[in-house]
Image 1 (cartoon, rainbow, N blue to C red):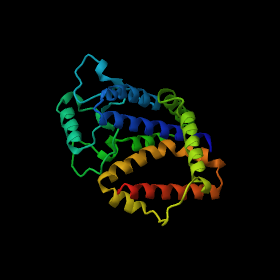
Image 2: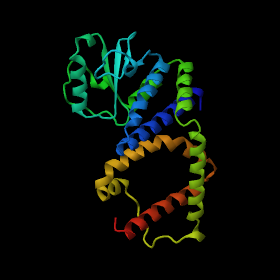
Image 3: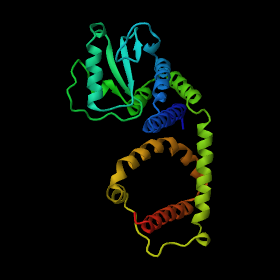
Image 4: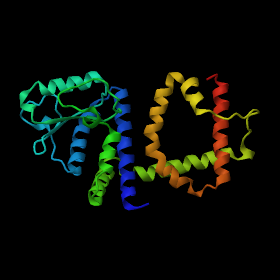
Amino acid sequence: MDNRQTYISVIIRRLSYLKTEVTEFNTLNLTDINVFAENFYRDLFNTIGYTFDNTNFEENNFAHIDLIDEKNKIVIQVTSQNDNVKIKEAIDGFFANPENKDFKLKLLLISKDAKDYRTKFGKDFNHKEDVIDIKRLIAIINDIREIDKIKGIADFLDKNVLPERRKIESSEVETILALIEYLSKDNHRNLSVIPDNVDPEYKINRRFSEHSEFIMNQYKDLCSVYQMPLFESRKSIDGVTAIKISNYLKDESDMQLTKHNT
């Protein structure tokens, strides 16, 4: 793995973790994290090369603006909402002030993905470029050519978002894999009488239709967080053992779900 890929991997893991954390806090109506996120993303964008200030510390009244870059004439509203109403409200409110006419408005979604919006927002607002979710932010960073700048962003995230996270994740995954490997050995368990081939499409979208969106979102968020530690931890497992573990998990999952009529 070259240096660039290493740095991008750190960036993806840190931003994905933070996105999940904001989502979980907001689910419990603990929205103070959104306020802290404003300063975090101000500093992150400035690491990329911008000169944003948080308008909460400015004397002027900046409605519908959280971050402002006077030099590059860009403003950002940081939000955890991704619906059409929220975006239109932000655009209309921002451009209601004639003093904002020379600035470019961006919306930063810190916990939800951008939608394929069909609403014509107007005001020279292109949602494909001007609504920035975490996936798009990662793509913007990945498009940076200077390796030193990429490293600086990775170092910033490593310092500000769980600096010991990688070590903890690897240890955690290794422990889980060791436990599963032990349980999956033939002399420690009994296989179900009728093993079935598990169909993820059926299980998620039909069997758990009421929870399918939550399951898929959790998978997408956590996959990027645990993908690298999992890859590192499973290096010591041979192909045969991996197949046994996989079959064990499928079998155990099906037995438990059937037992509880789910």
